[in-house]
Image (cartoon, rainbow, N blue to C red; front, side, top):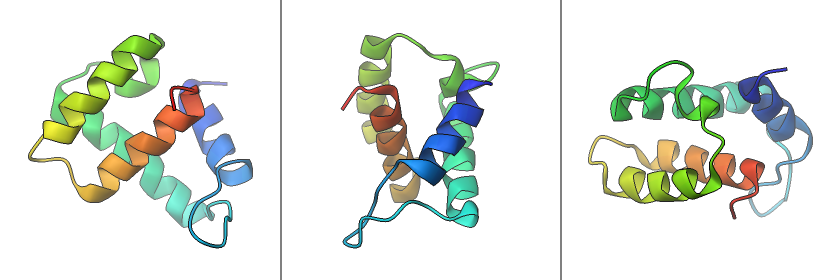
Length: 90
């Protein structure tokens, strides 16, 4: 199972969001997955992009790059924060 697949499964089964503390539905999961891919493209990260990154310190540093990236949307930043939770960074 790839990191992308594990992220999808985690979003559907473990990630809690919002005031009601619910897991995501499939349409929202797809948006999160594509948001991470979009950030990878905007940052010029090759291959499977952010999904291939395993170094937790590198993922933390990338968070600051994304925060300063003018082309990153609010949703993409939120999706990346969820990815950091998935990886155990936050």
